[in-house]
Image 1 (cartoon, rainbow, N blue to C red):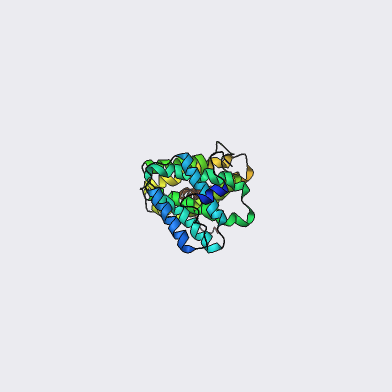
Image 2 (image 1 turned 90 degrees about the vertical axis):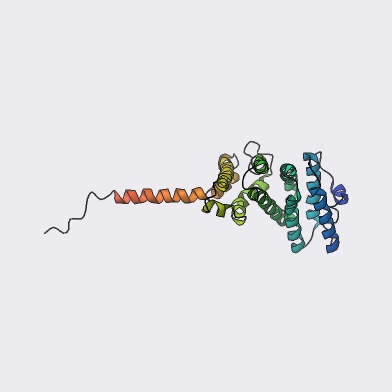
Length: 258
């Protein structure tokens, strides 16, 4: 565990977090409400504070049993980004990837599904933060830095655990579609298209990753038919094929010679 992270016992005792895994629904709701109020009141969030909070939240989900409470808590944790001031969003998301990257190799197989879901939900929250601001502005640039520096970082292969990186490559197109970003692109929103192309370039960069599984997954997801450049490439290929077929004939058919 990173030196600035807290222990599991300390995380359980942190204010606002200790009851998130409680079997008592009232205690869970009150704890979540207190955490939302705390986060919304913060004008700034240091990387250290953000990592400590996410470490506590990681252990809260780690201790949560049964599928429905796990699913609900994963969604609630992802939605905490909505309570943040704009200046806190980038350190909040960066801390998530930092903590999950540290903890990922230690997650037991029986607990993995709920963390896979958490990654999907948090990735979607990043997309919503971009979309809700019209794909422009400081928050959007901050999310882009997180995507380039953590999710799809091609410079530091050790920064994000392999399994976590592969899962991010699995979900990014799904969440762009689910959050309506690909729909905005189809509707002619150039800012939305610019954001999708930015993410696509990050993923394309991973096609040159030394790790074979990452290269393959990046190539597969970058070629997803839902993405705007894939449709264009297919159309160009079809046009080229039509031209080749049309060019085979030298002239019109002159009929059957007697």
